[in-house]
Length: 44
Image 1 (cartoon, rainbow, N blue to C red):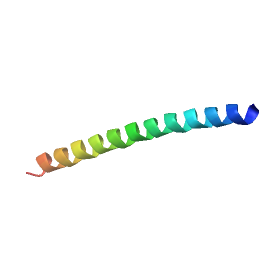
Image 2 (image 1 turned 180 degrees about the vertical axis):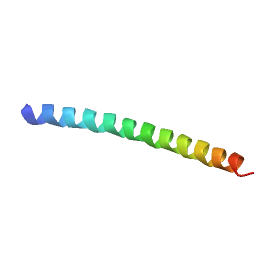
Image 3 (image 1 turned 120 degrees about the vertical axis):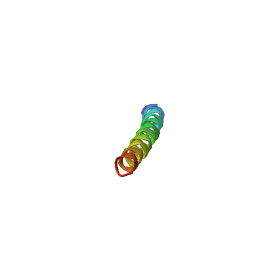
């Protein structure tokens, strides 16, 4: 019983971290694109 509960909790935690990591990567990508665009406009 304890092993099953631990497995379920671990799976839910890993899924949550995975979703969070995807969000971080997406946000970082957006910031990087905005920064490149801003630098490009500033150096025209």
